[in-house]
Amino acid sequence: PQGTKLIYTTCIVLFAIIMMFMLYCSAYLMYFTVFKAEPPIEFKSPSSIRDALKNAEFRDIVISVASTYLLYLFLSFIHCEPWHMFSCLIQYILLLPSYVNILMIYSFCNTHDVSWGTKGDNINIGNLNEVLLTEEGNETVKIDVIEEEDINAVYNNIVKELKNKDHEEKQHRNAFTKKDDNNRLFRTNLVLSWIFTNGLIIFLFT
Image (tube, rainbow, N blue to C red):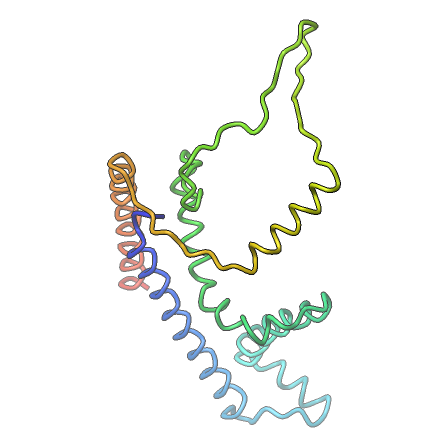
């Protein structure tokens, strides 16, 4: 949202830090589960593999974590698009808590406001085509059919525009938008307070 950029960015950073801590804890537990287990876990024979699967810590931690990320890699190869696993996996994992928590909270708290996710598009361009009612009661829409030469020209213009990088213009909010953003900011702070107090209760009593 335009009016809560600071809080929005702060929450994303905090969730990313929490996710980094969780990844560290998972790697730490996996290391001690595999290399410091008593008796040591080995994969030299089928019987040793069966013994490893009987180990509750190995079964619940190592297999669950490894299967998740191996499933990502396996499905990427099935779709012949594994490149993002090497270029975007870390960013995706760090942003995953924000996708799950922040976006879910937005959808939960703003079901009555369908304009929340317009991504800054606050301009109403109107209808592209006007619906006309004929004397027979039929509804008709006038559509201009683009000729093939026009389509090629439009394609060439789009290719030229893609080569030129547009400079992002700074958006300014009017008084009505600022007031609306303040109302949304209050609602956002209220929801965040509710979340953190619930987290505090969970931390104190569990």
